[in-house]
Image (cartoon, rainbow, N blue to C red; front, top):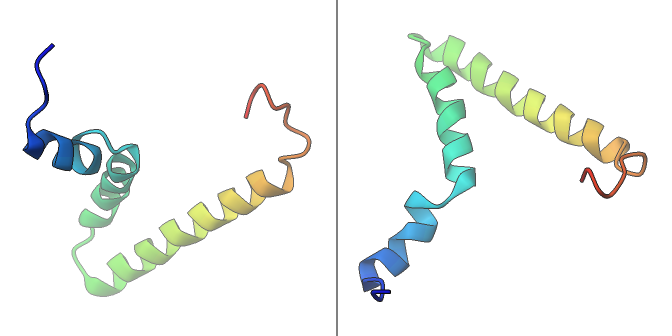
Length: 70
């Protein structure tokens, strides 16, 4: 097996193999469809609210979810 190049070692975890970056890109496509600043700010706040509320909901029921599912 060939050794990876230093550039690959440096950038692969950040760009190519980063699931969080891919999820953020998914959110950005929803924000990119707006054409006005006020609508894009409202959509950005909505995305933040939904993400926060879903995190709070999962945190509230985490003791009821079996560890095999989590």
